[in-house]
Length: 155
Image (cartoon, rainbow, N blue to C red):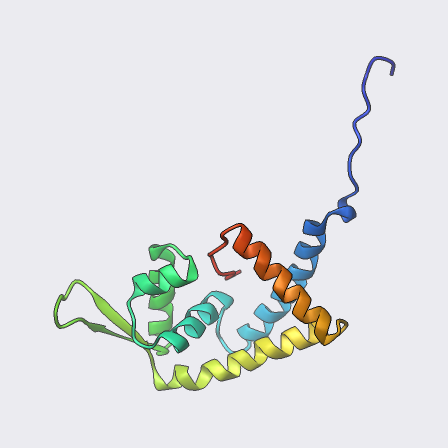
């Protein structure tokens, strides 16, 4: 094959992104499977957890806080309304706008779901020391900030 140039191709497993995706997929899939046993999806968990801090708010604020499109947030709100985990009320000052809030059942459920997330993290990251876990968290947050990543993971 004279006259053709050989191009070096990096090894798949030499990429940090490969390993991040590899670990992330396994962590995320295990968490999603555990959540589904409660009847909640990861996307629903993200909305419920954000609303736990926010209190009553609008679907557009939920979309903004999670980085979801308004359409995606609206569909999730509808699903959570159907599951009786949210309430929706029209605003007295402008009927075009609505407030949504967690039901008492949702307020009781969120700590249970958070405990599942905590157990999943402990399981997957137990091989790391506390200092290594803290360093990993700081580094991942630094990368997210450097690239202005806003959309919360929901898959």
